[in-house]
Image (tube, rainbow, N blue to C red):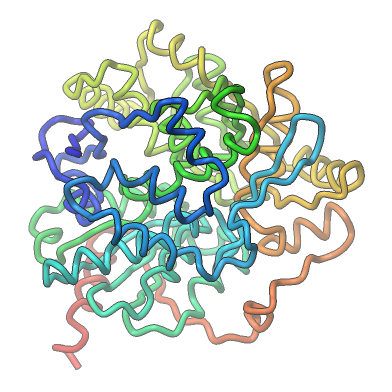
Length: 467
């Protein structure tokens, strides 16, 4: 399998190269040259497999030529061995034709664990084989940071630096990052919002001398390995609801578009998904685009669902590339114009084609609280403020008669203040995190300034020489 940049000016790579590179050298995102396809018979043969085996079967075509299947299977088994639920990704019926796909039973209680626990093993495997060391830099709106740190903490060939927007994550989310005791972890609290953090990461990758000196890599969803690791759970859920003989719909709370892009990728591989419902909070750039072709940048407003407080959805570039006929020059121009003007000019036929498959939905904070209380009262199902937006979207927007897979992206205990406000009680943290509030935090503050952040990353990388 070979991969190309959405902007067409970076070299083609294999899966191992894409894993280590993260962002393409031209600022684009890597995509497979073609999508692997599974026939109906091949999909049916996956039904009933343990989740790690199903995941290995789905991911194997993407890693072909880079990682042997037997090694991939072993890594999948190790990645999911310590999840809190035996099913790994249990599918819970919440209402008629509405199912919550619980993606939060990993160590950091968020869906990011589903891919990143595997990505940590992939990094270790490839780096050991190559005799290399990388320095991962990533931005987080809440959950990616802790999941990435958990995945690579104390791995000898990896340093990791995570940028989070200071004061704009939940306390649990922050503490899950800043209380990890590992010599290879640097947390930076940026004076700004998530988009500032994301821009700083992209700027570091665009700084070619710095990128080369640090041997930078990425684990957030700009890394295609993350997307590949998220595809299997949609296959798993759809097979359990009657696919491939039966169509399904998916509803995904999303800000950066990576999670729902993985569902769309599953469709390209043969899974019969009839509709993709994009669930947004008040920061609704994706819903505005789907409703009215309005992909314009607005000020990010803090919300009760902070992981979706994003003004620019990075992974949308991948979908745009596909719907523009994989025309890299056109995608590069569209993205450059978007960066310069703050508005994305998408031609009507492309917007209409995207809208045929995708539908937008939004909830503000008041409605989010009401829906948490409503699902708890009517179905005895407690959902966090992100997952509940997906559940409401699935209930309100689903095609008639189709089962809806609503991605439950975080454990309610990650947002105890919101849950208490909605239902009157605070959900307890699982036993392995029961002392989280007592652990010492370690992080460094920085302005939203490239030089300041690069200096911190450089000093951390050279800490042993400077000691």
